[in-house]
Amino acid sequence: MSDQAQREGRLLESDGRSDPSDLAPTPSEAVTAPPSGKSTEPGSDENRQDRWWSRKPKAQRRPILGPRLVWNVFELQHPWKVFFAALAGLVTVMMVVSAILVATSSDSPDDDIVLLDDDVAAGVETSSVQASGSVLPPFAEPDPAMGMSAPTVIASTLDGDRVELGAGGGPVVIGFFAHWAPHSQEEMPQVVQWLDAPDLPTGVEVVAVSTSVRSESENYPPSAWFERVRWPNTVVLDSAEGAIASQFGLTGFPYWVAVNGDGEIVGRSAGQITEPMFRALLAAAAE
Image (tube, rainbow, N blue to C red):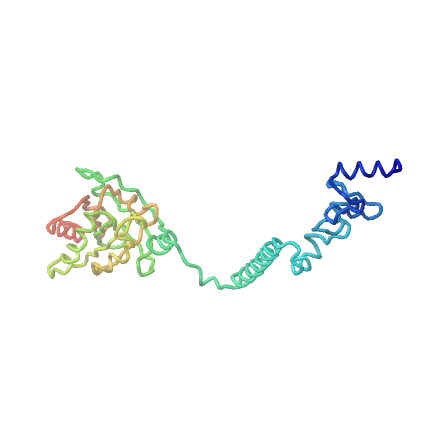
């Protein structure tokens, strides 16, 4: 036996094979040769490029944003783009709607403006006041204003008329009321009843002055209060600063001032009064 045959025999015995044909590789042992010029190493770039995802090179990819956004969305290459496209569309629609609303609101007439409470108080429940003459000292007992000339004020009424109050206006008894003051609320209905008496002095006007208006306080607005208690005579509106009340020396509510035909102060009272006190003021003004 030749030396080569002996060597093959020894190889067969060591490998557990009895036929030289067994030296051919089995199918499981066959190895596919890599394509020419490519590596079969697991970590090589060539092997990674040929694996399952096989995407385009960067230079050939379509941009995520920009002119191709809509095309990319419809291709569904990136599903999260749908969200951003929908968000962009929603923002665009909102901007268009806002522009339309602004354009239409600018054509609205001024009559549609709604006044706030403070605007209503300044425009309806109070008035501008023109005052002249001496300012009366604050009420006290004995009254330092007795015999003094009454100041003259010009103000608006609840009906919108401008009236003159004080000296030169004839005999008058002026009552100052605050819609939020408990004593004013209690006395007003009583005075309405007293005014119905048939034996009151004639020729004396009884005027109410609505003062110290507070839109945030109870019993507001005072115009509704005077209507509710059925005040029968003129209601003069004081200014927001209480100019008429200051001119006549008001110190509390209710507050009464009697002025005779000569324009002189003939009586004042602070706080609630009784019917006899009310009649005394009327009588003093009538003299």
